[in-house]
Length: 114
Image 1 (cartoon, rainbow, N blue to C red):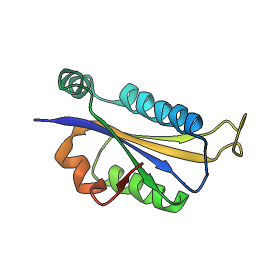
Image 2: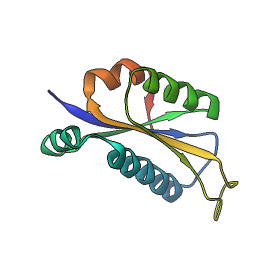
Image 3: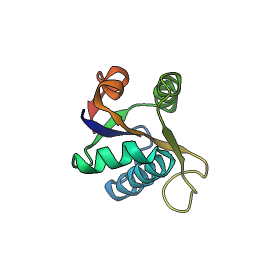
């Protein structure tokens, strides 16, 4: 069984590359910290595959969060502190998993890579 993690980033916020990297890292780490240890272990042993995808709006991002929640996947919704480029409390990205690739693909397979 193959495991992976998904990070979905909002493009409408027009974050810099560095800001995106920081926010995506927050999403990845937070999702791992919330995940079941056995899934994290399997994911690590398989190379810790991560896929970063994009959406165009807050509403679209929340749609994927709701779908992941309905499918009982671990999620981490990231809100920015507002110290640099964007307004405090802005939802920037979403981490999902790690979990089985099939479960994640079922939800995110139509999204494009960042």
